[in-house]
Image 1 (cartoon, rainbow, N blue to C red):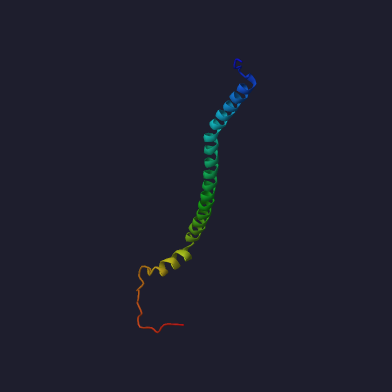
Image 2 (cartoon, rainbow, N blue to C red):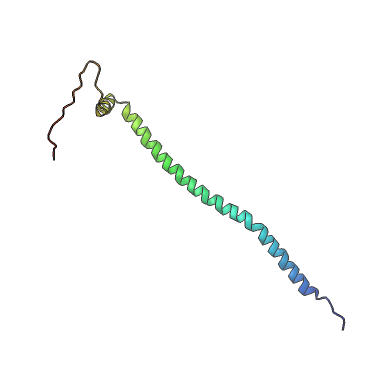
Length: 96
């Protein structure tokens, strides 16, 4: 009895092989898409953090434009105005 080719089985296997190759071709772009999506979310979180920091710095800049704030900051750093005399007092009892 001669061996006959079963074209229906062969075509099924061929279609499965083509489907497997197509799926393999989609794996790498899909991985790339997912990693890019995750990176965009990380970057968005970084941007929101930087925006908050920027707003804080702008508020500090606005505050430093006030002469009273600049003077109090300079006093905190131990600076004195021109013509003033600075004194250091030591030996005071510690407060509670």
